Image 1: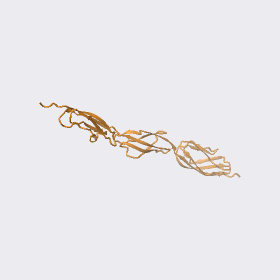
Image 2: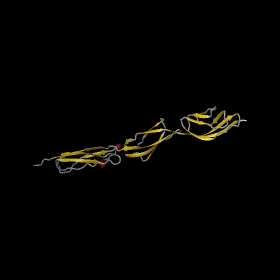
Image 3: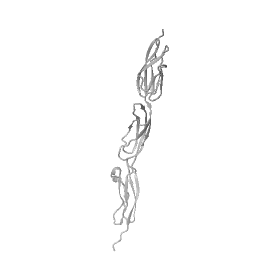
Image 4: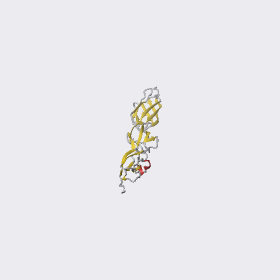
Length: 232
């Protein structure tokens, strides 16, 4: 009398959307095999006992195995884990310019259109460098990468006009304004340089320290003082 098969219980792992194959191990020359509890995309060849296919769902699965011959049926268990597949992340918009709003990098994925979560260090408003980690959030794919978002200083609008006039015994110099993003008045930080009393005047050298948000600015303006006519 034939003895029924003895099926070996085991563990195996595969990857989402990647070809998988597993041979059911059993003694006593089974003539047919059966399984229940396979993830979608996998099936069993009932003659050979080979489980194969491309799994379309991740997670742990308890697969019930059976093998049959003339002596009966033996059973076992396959602890099967289908892992997430690895996806790729390409980063974009890493170099931007200060405009008073929060800045963010962008990402595209392979495969396309996967959700990406960004975890930044810092506020991402003022000029500076902000490190971050970008991670895929998806039931079937995993992947992450690191990057640095660089926010450059903006250029303030600096307008300076030199003085032109006739000697009057008073000191004269350039006038000007500095305006930042959103129309913010930054004129208080504008240094208009020297003033001049006597003819013919001179050239002032202005400076504007931009601070954490704006680029520095410097330049010159001519101040012209014409000689006065003496009273006779």
